[in-house]
Amino acid sequence: MTTPGLSSAVVSARAALADRTVPFVVVGLTAALVGAGWVGGLPSVVLIAFATLPLVIVFGYRVALLGLTVILVLRALVDSSGGPTISAGVAAGVIGLSVFVLVRSPSWPVRVLVIALALFASAAAGSATYGAAETYGEAVRVLSLVAVAVVTINAPGTVTFGRVTGVVQLIGVVPALVALLQFVTGTGTPSAGVLRSTGTLSQANSAAALFALCAIATFARLLAGGRRKWLDGGLLVVFLVALVTTASVGGFLTVLVMVIVYLLVEAGRRMHRVVLGMLAIVVVVAATVNSEIGAARFSEFSGGTQDNSLGWRFQAWGKVLAAWHEHPVFGNGLGATTSGIILKSIPHNEYVRMLAEVGLVGLAAVSLLAVWYAVAMVRRLGTGAPRKVVALGIAVLVGSMVNAVAANTMLYTVAFMATVYVLAACWRMARETPLPDAVPASGAAPASEPVRHRVTA
Image (cartoon, rainbow, N blue to C red; front, side, top):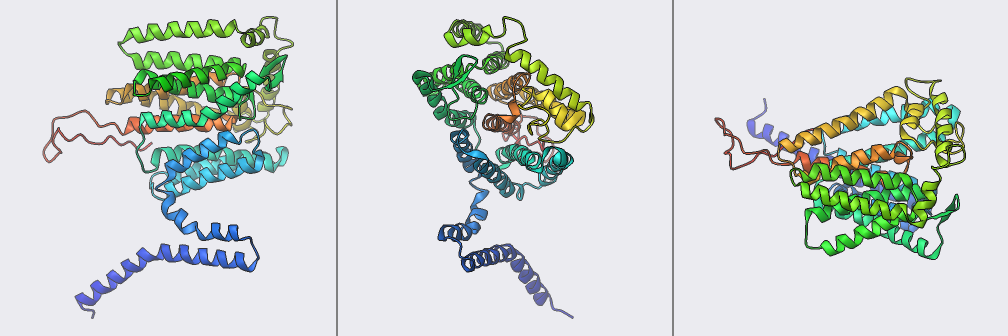
């Protein structure tokens, strides 16, 4: 028969052992990894990287938001020159950050695991026809987009409107300045007789999507007020002019839609802001359409649809839809439309592309998620969420959906990672808004102590 003292000592010993199990395992595996690398003759820098794994595991969760910011900024800088190796490395880095966050977010691992299984099942379905490297590579890329949302919503730290919009500016400022330099020096990419700036991104339309996002984030900062209006005003001009130099009609329409939606949601009863904003839009549209680049691009769509980019899109969409008809429910698998088999290029329409790759089921899932997000954000206004936060989230969502009609919005990895970051951050800020003061019930907290509004989504 055990005595109470001995029993409590056993329990304490077990608890202490449990607390030390994970550190012992991590350190032991790290030592084994370093030892194996040393025996195998790996370079010293690799051995040092192995040795820092415990620190990465311990502090990765705490600095996940900062790490995500660094990754997004660097990804924008190397997009045009990084190649598949660096792109895959960045995707792995974001997914790795999300793992650190997931282990401390009890309600999220199952959700992410279900999404990952669905992605890789789709990739497996099309791997034999379209190539395993293409399909599984696309699955990893999409999973990295999910990882951006996971880190943004769940990582510790303070997420504010100013910090989020500032991060977006930081992601786009160097690419925008490079785009302006390309325009001034005439070193852009020629397309249909027009030199189109790409900045540090791999393609002009991708750069335009990023600059549109940066422009609406900066525009929102200006309306919100602050101590650096002169800086935000200058950056807004930089992003808008850089957007014009890309000669992207889709990007131009996207930023217009974003600004209009933002004004309508954020202004509320302050109609003078809507009027002034609309007047500014008219001036920008007139200046852009009458510019040399704008006139050249818009003239492509004024002489029929046979020999211009619009006519090419119609033909491409027809081929992609024909491929979808073969597997209408679940599609042909991730990466099918980017493999060069269905099309030599990519379809420039995300709705058609999703139909062909993930079928009616996948398109319905993404569409329902977008509708749910918009409805949930509007409902947050009723619980006191900052109007500017809700306005930015909805504006970015609607603008992206418009851009997706004639562009490869989700394939623009840099721009869409930044888009997911903004959408997730706005959702996090809106759901963490304190509830309005209520009449305290028996045993409830006083009305002067607002309850944090937490929603597991």
